[in-house]
Length: 201
Image (cartoon, rainbow, N blue to C red; front, side, top):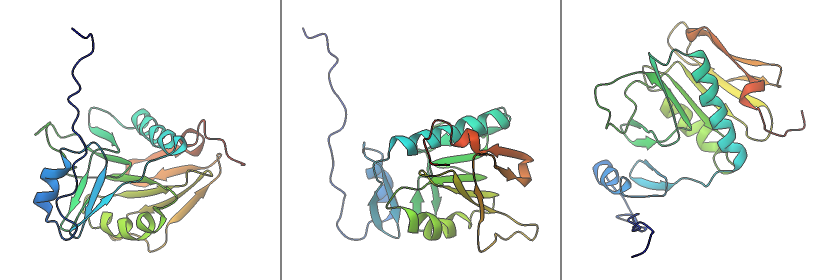
């Protein structure tokens, strides 16, 4: 008898259709996939393979949030935990929401409060325009951050006193700067977000 456990990982399964796919069909199909996909307006979109720098920055965000937020009250999730709108299912690089123990098997955030996307070469237009507009429709969202993976630069949209988001983001640049999240009264040092990331400045 072989000492290796039987490989029961699912084989690649083609998308259910080359055309329109409704949300329920996508949800049933994507649960069986090893690759990462999003759903937008009936289209299935495969997510890009990420670089070491991308993964490191995501990890740094999770660690920095974890050090500053009370983990008894906040859940901090990365990459695989989705958010859902009427016409899209997305998987932000980082999602922070109030801790909710009602259903440990749920697959979507209930009240996303902070969302972060780290730029990939092909994701700029989606992250800055499409996803920015979608994420800001969540009534619970306080902050949306887009982070460069090449230089210590982040772009911050923060909900204003009148309940709206600014049209243009605040740019935070340099390792000496910090991302100040007013509603949570915390600041994320850029030196921690870009720890171990080699950049020219």
